[in-house]
Amino acid sequence: QKEVEQDPGPLSVPEGAIVSLNCTYSNSAFQYFMWYRQYSRKGPELLMYTYSSGNKEDGRFTAQVDKSSKYISLFIRDSQPSDSATYLCAMSRGYQKVTFGIGTKLQVIP
Amino acid sequence: NAGVMQNPRHLVRRRGQEARLRCSPMKGHSHVYWYRQLPEEGLKFMVYLQKENIIDESGMPKERFSAEFPKEGPSILRIQQVVRGDSAAYFCASSPSGTGKFTGELFFGEGSRLTVL
Image (tube, rainbow over all chains, first blue to last red; front, side, top):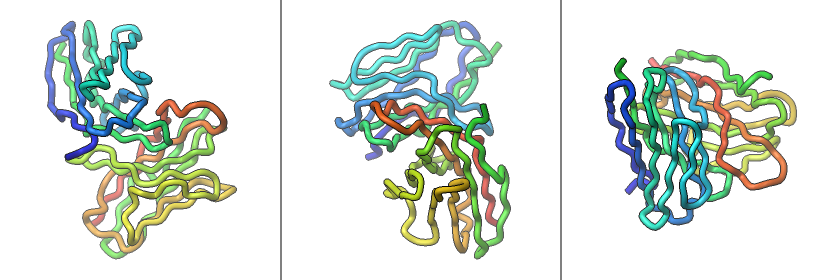
């Protein structure tokens, strides 16, 4: 079993839709939860960071962490074509090593 | 303020040759990480280095792969006697040094894409 499971998609939605992206994990020692966005042929960039359980909102993006279920989510409201990218969940135990999910490829259709 | 710089961006090698990938972290960052990305596997951690020290190499293959981050100059990921299975995108990331909790924020370069013929 992988430490972090993420559906690779692809996920295709119309512009303006609400997008829900999810990951599950098996290691209860993870404390820091991140979402990275990666455009084609580019390096990943950090979108959201959450420590432990709870919600965090930043503009159109909301990150949720449920440690009891080992489940994290990223919601994108009013999705735009520019949101088309691969979204990677990532986790850390507080050490420097970050473990990534495989990434979900999202396409927002105008 | 330059970001993480990786070169070469593209590298083609024949089986048995050596590949050297270089990474200059962001200014003020002294922590460097190397990741390998394959379409069917995602980003896989390889090694974490600080200046002149390898901190965690748990993701590095035991043979043919090595990494260094000297006191002066870029970090280098070296792959000896490359095989076709080494073809991948290799990403370098850096993070700030110093005190405080690690938040997971890594700053990535654009990657080096290795093709082994």
